[in-house]
Image 1 (tube, rainbow, N blue to C red):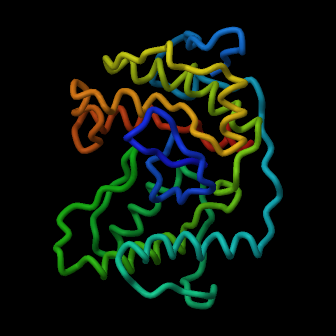
Image 2: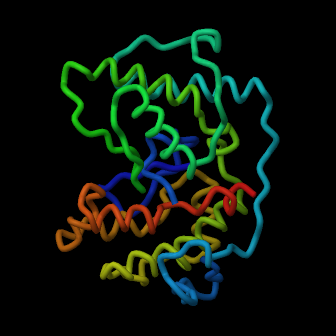
Length: 249
């Protein structure tokens, strides 16, 4: 996984990220050239896109699942300065382990059922009408919801070379045409060669992602804000990572 720094045009690979907090959601350019490949049909329909390889994920043990769940809950509770659980016994039972696509809707539904009307967006979860004095109560509910619907640990593991290849293909083949369909102009001269992209990612160096280019442009600030109607449409259609089934097999 990786995190974004909007002060740069590159992305620092930092290890596994928490899906419910990630700005993430959701192509074959060769080393000979890095220009995006035109995809047929609707540029906002990710179901029409497929990578050239099918990555496989390493097996995950039950101990890894438990550790991952505790980490996910801790990342939520730390934000609200709440006590951090140290064992599974302190958490509510798992209802279902989920992928990135299911996480937002299920967490939003869970929060709504706990008295905090929420809705998923392509960039996270939106909760309306929460009062300042409800912050810690909300944080506890959020942590409990994440505990009940944690990301499967395989989605938080470090990516292998095939997964970075899929990410590159997705960005160049799907993501760039998708955001361009909203009127955003991407400088394709900044796109690295596939081999360079993968080698940088695997070595933990800064890597390219087009979102760090266009979100700096004042012309696109409405689209960069997922709270605006068009921004919400873009965030949903042009997710920053491929669908889970394409990236993790």
